[in-house]
Image (cartoon, rainbow, N blue to C red; front, side, top):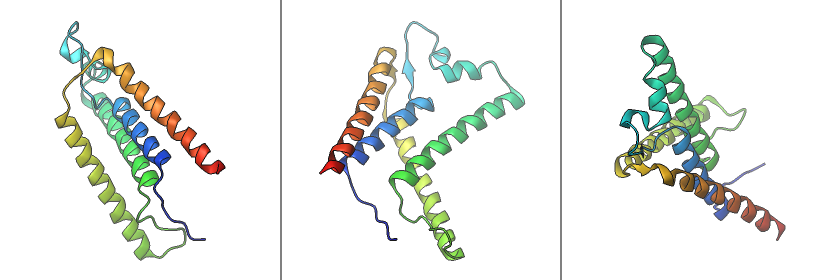
Length: 150
């Protein structure tokens, strides 16, 4: 069985929605609330202020692992190039590992580029930001079902 990747509008919308959710879920968007102290503006930063030493290291590791899982999910679902099929030789697995690490490096670079280029988001715009992700996901799902019915 031979599989191939194809471009679809529904997958593009789902990709954008998942990227928006990943950015919000991993607390990668700085949110500005003028009524509070800057360190307490983001929930993740307020939680980190209470811990130190081993407990802080565990929290930081969990945050990094969650970001790695989101990047892996996006890289492997929406960019399936270089994946090794089951039963492939050692050479195919090595190529798969190199392509996976390359995709993670590109994702990390794009994340760093996004974080340095965007300013703080107003706290009242956060529900609109996540609402855009919801609408893009629903529109992508609707387009997928409509395109399969033809």
